[in-house]
Length: 320
Image 1 (cartoon, rainbow, N blue to C red):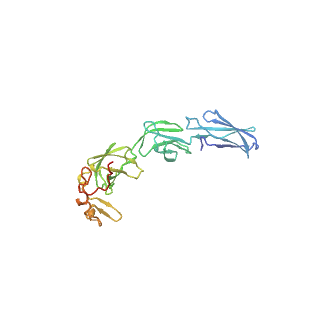
Image 2: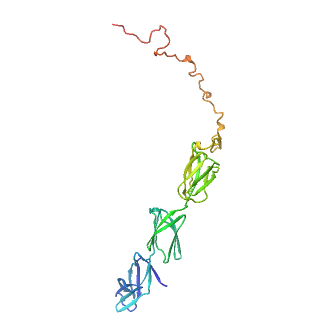
Image 3: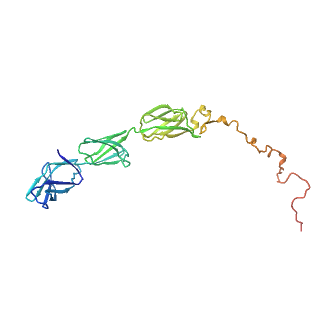
């Protein structure tokens, strides 16, 4: 069974050297298994009858894996180790939209050997899967993200252009434009991006389309009104509040009783029929400002109409 070493991870190479004294130098040569060419030379030591040295295996940019072997010269001995495979144990996954810009939170499933991982590309549209086991890699985009084309699918980086499929939901709550009261059992139509349906709100003014749709704008028609609503992410449980203008509703909706729910119960507009008028409030004077005689009229010159001989409330100065 061949040993696998992850590229970029430091390891210790060692070989038993029972006939070599401790402290002797040990020269390691890293060789390509395919043709025996020397890739790297390292200097180690013999300790406890073992020749050992630290080494960080590496790969070329275009390599996903390669096999190597190493030989050790210690004293007058030459020791040969079996082949090992250096493989790339991490991969950078990048998601782009069709315009080539980063597409955040694209979800995927990555299968490597017997291991399956599920993840997403995060807010930057890029994620590194590290410490992977050896084996062939297979990546599938999930949750409505559809592959348009691979821009790069090399050993270290997988970069894909994606189309955003059906990953959103339509959740609505219809409320009156004045009063913000739920509009219950209201029929409507909803159209946009392949969607064309008729529905009705529930008793709380709510509606949720059971199937996933694409992000974007949708046209909501209620009576004579036409409104724009938006699909929200499928994980968002909050409905979009839609204020429906009263003019969009029919006369039958205008004439319905006003019902306000409170902690004490329901209050109808009929309950206000016996409310007192202002003049019936205790202490109000019905005759206030009603009697024309209560005020002295003013003539056009601003003088009192009373032309009596009473002296004015001022004194005229004597002429010189």
